Image (spheres, rainbow, N blue to C red):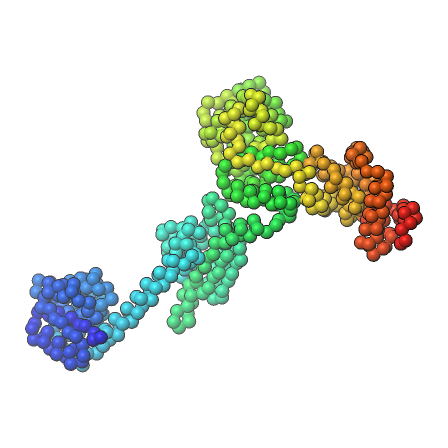
Length: 565
């Protein structure tokens, strides 16, 4: 397809000369005698090059230049003047003219500048196509892309990067450390390293707090940007948000612990997933369960795994304080509001500002405190005792009880409206007897902990103790198991905890609940001895330690049961 050229000049002879020279060279040429005719031509056709005289009656070639740059930005415009001077040329070039030639026109010069302009147009169009394609890719890619120049100023950020890093358009042109001030320091250091060394860098799954609502897990990759001659001109930061994948992996992976909680049973896996879901939401949570099931640990896990983890976690045992003291502790008081109030004091709600308050044993609070607590849940504001001015508080409320609040509501001892405000989300904790699969993990955890605090080197519990722990119903739950293990550690002077090291009252329940005949007991003991010998490759000393008895006792039992070892 022939390149199309428009010639604009008020001299008919010059238009004819231009048209003949250019047509002979193979170009398709149109002409226009003035500004208005030129605009009409430009509106109808798309030209590859435009030649325009500087003087066009009441208009100028500069006016034509402005109009063409608005309608056909990539079209090169060459100014033609009979009186060339520096001011005219400078103004034309400043406004975007490709070049200028002077009258009288020399054919060789005309064709040379036409060829250069056509070549420029093709290159400009190719660059524009590339720019549009790159812009489309830059805008549509799911990963966050940030480009900085060699001086460290932020030049571009796509929509994904703006979303991930919480950026707006105003950050463009700022030093990247200022623009990414809410980002992990490691991200900025990675970018700086690439700018300084010209080498790629990568950080796998780092935790950041860009989002005001949740913890983010990001993978970052930095690469140098170089120009056509290989000179460094900046760097690009590619960010992949892997928060969702990380959450899915953690929910699918069977975890043996979550913060300070220990357990791998199905019930505990469900609990961990629920805590993951609740970590970043502000909803009030009610933790229910028997005494000793770990309600305080759940409250700690909720706080530490959420966006409020850098703020205070304030704990209040509602059952440990009298009515008046509890009010003062929770809401604070002003001086002189009651006997003993010698100075102003802020309460636990204000101390928990921005964080979490844990109200343990919530079922034990009086009706008066229930009413005041209801207002906190409804309005998120408190009034100190002796003060009428309400104070707004930004807190998450987590409550816990081992009592049946629904039954208390039916009996009239607990407000129904408060009950429903508290149980927005309920976390029921399973008793230990319903998750006995976790007992070996809990025992192992407690052994490690007690070895550290007591300076011992206990390696485990005997088979009899393990079986007894599985048979026992644990009315005191995990707290009871902790106390039993601590007692056993005090008594135990060998590597393995045996039945004789357990508390006597606990062992008494074994005797009371055992309906097995002496013959069955003996058969179980023979089986335990044989298992211990097999596990220790028939090493009697090791088998005795595993059983929690001394070697003499083991020899005696071997002889009694006629076990050939």
